[in-house]
Each structure stands twice: as C-alpha cells, then as structure tokens.
Amino acid sequence: MRFYPAPYNRAGVEDWIDRSLRRYAEHGHGLWAMVLKVSGEMIGDCGLTVQNVNGSDEIEIGYHVRRDLWGQGLATEAARACRDFGFGCPRSRSFLSFGQRIFPRAGLRKRMA
Image (cartoon, rainbow, N blue to C red; front, side):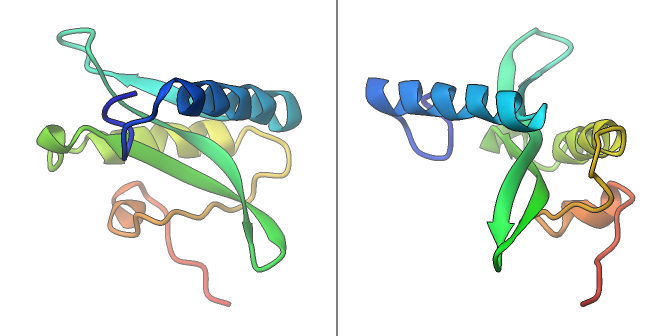
C-alpha cells in the first residue's frame, strides 16, 4: 500500500483490510482494485463506501488513481462503474464524492439542498 494516499505500515494495512471486510459485511460493498487492462498492473482503487455527513449516512463514490496516470479518464471510468453498480444496491438513490470534477463526467449531477 505504498501509493495509497500516504504509505501504511503493516498495522495500518491490517487495519485497512479489517475496515474493508467490515464494509462488505455491513453494507455489501466497499473498495475494489483498479487494474490497468493492458498490463494487469494495479493502479489504484475505487468503490462505494458509507460516509457520515452531518449525522446522515451517505454512499460515497471514491477512487484513488496513481498520480502519473491522472488525466487519462481512468477515475471517470471507475466512477461510472461504481455508479452503475451502486444503483443496483438497496438504499442507493444518491451518491456523494469529494472529487467533484469527476462527477459530471461520470453522468452525475450535484444535488441541491
């Protein structure tokens, strides 16, 4: 997990794995590996995670793409796949993302309060 926004030590990796397994057990979804099709190389992760926002659980479309691959549409492709999967999950009517530039490219729009 050298490239996951900041490097994790062994304990950090074990904690991340525990959280990921718990997400799948509790919500039926979590993060997936992003693999570059041409080489089979892992280049990041993406998926659906539950985030608490102002006391309400919201489903986030999240992604991390290796920095040298930014600008190639990979985050957009990942966000679209997450969106398509997410709309098939129970209780998934809307999503949030902290990467707001990708949202419109993935065919999603900003929800007004």
